[in-house]
Length: 182
Image (cartoon, rainbow, N blue to C red; front, side, top):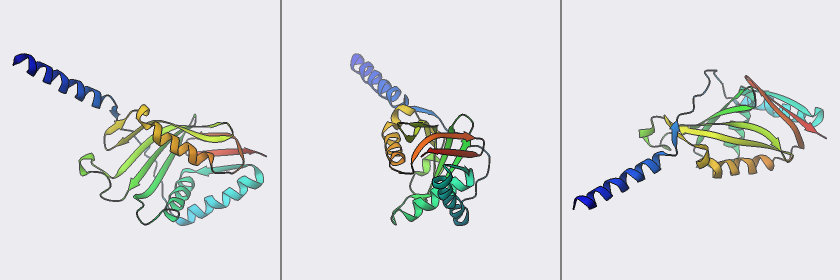
């Protein structure tokens, strides 16, 4: 009987360690405030025309976040669980995003209604690409290896934008610049 109990304890311990192997600490978002509103989204949308004509555009965090949030709201159905998307840009093409969800999407045990993502943006094969390196909800993080399906969907959407051929994407603290080749 003692032998069976040892095997059960060992199996339960192994399952616990295996399930926690994908957990990391949470993603911290910068303390810069970002206001999302329709007017800022319209300003950012006007800059898309500049991108097509001049081949270069620079968006602030507020412009990019507003544009992304408003477009997501307008192009999603009534069951859209996303309230807003805040995006922070850091040097060396580092991107941090906070996806604010409507109440009740995440279980209360996670202590909030937001998903935090971090990654690096680049240009590969003529398309903007995002390589996620982490995600978290509440204080619980998810390792990048578990984000591969999400990352593939994001990159498929970015590849289908059809804005021309991106040559460079550069981020700095508070802004992103996209340059196109014609």
